[in-house]
Length: 84
Image (cartoon, rainbow, N blue to C red; front, side, top):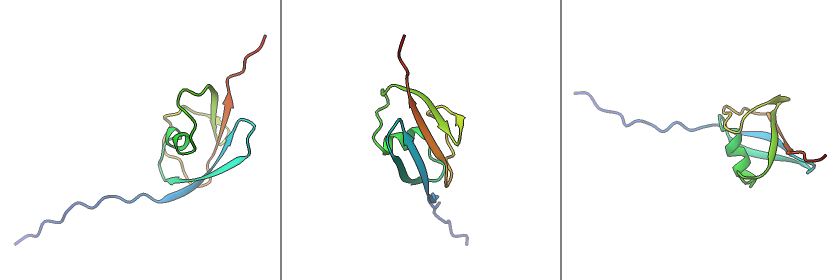
């Protein structure tokens, strides 16, 4: 007789990333491994409609929906620049 095993939920490892938001101090965030940039922004309370000009992940421009954040990643957020 075979016993069926219930599928186990995959637990995601918690990681720490660094977020630099405009001119503010560095923020460190604990989030699950593989999270998206958007999830990180939500976790620190940056509204989706905030005027973000550029998001950089470890020095490379990425979109908000970029996923697979890893331990030690650094997200830097730059505002839209106006002027004339």
